[in-house]
Image (cartoon, rainbow, N blue to C red; front, side, top):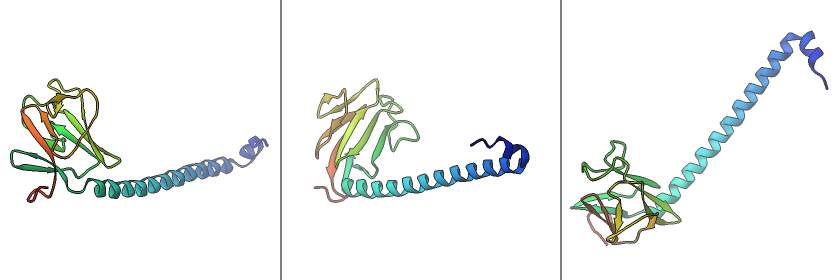
Length: 149
């Protein structure tokens, strides 16, 4: 069907059709955003349950693993931040997947070691594993920071 005569005969029709398309696209985008937010909240609850109680211990300080991704480095936006010149701004990334924590070296010059072995690809972590980043030695523990399992 050719709408050209309608557009010529009724100039308002073109504006109304354009407005309808814009409103329709906006409604679709809103529905997608709402669904994504719902899915994220569902995922957030899942990882929080899976990660409950795990943390890193370093020289009497405890760093709870309370997110699905945790950035370790010197950068101000790092979740676990160390002022150590041997640690890169974006040094390592901890991720939670299927209830297991993994650590990945983000290409840091001094690398990341787990239990004394330098890693080249993401490495699954277990309770009591020792992560070495720069001069820091972090131990994966289960507990609340006061009582450690």
